[in-house]
Image 1 (cartoon, one colour):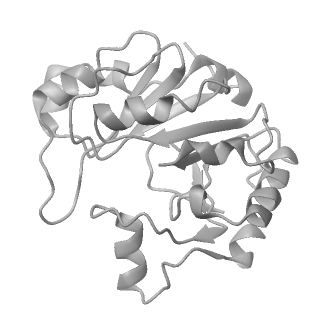
Image 2: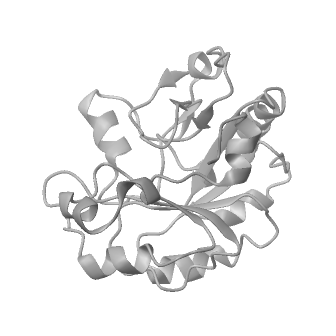
Length: 222
């Protein structure tokens, strides 16, 4: 378990490394290639064995993988660990939310089921698979288009971030305006968003967490 630089989570936990999606903007692949690590999905026992934090925390489970490539045994082990630590919130994320229908993926009160979407087409194609879940969030990072069709009665939390690294696609103002239009879900804008974001919008209203998540952690939601 590691303290994380991901600004919406307290810790990152990566019992699995690797992915086969082949996204050109993938920071996890760049990291693995830089340090000579395999990016073929594989289990990392020492990471799984790391002790959980003592205080109730937001833990992003798979910042270095996509769970759609996980073996069913891996899912079962990780979900069992989540169930054994009900004081924490565990965030999962995938580009293929049909993975949540895997029989090992039990519904838990402390698990938030996430999907990634960089543009409106991806939102529409992926959120349709999420209507059997209550604690749904969407990561729009990198934001590469205007998200105009998000169901903010389904999606309780929208995290928005910019593309980074060499050759990154700049975020456009109309994309940001579309993403920030939703009243039914909490909005969290990452620090890597353009500086002009904070000139146009009040930072305080763009660093939101869902009230039910804060209540679970025993944090003040006001």
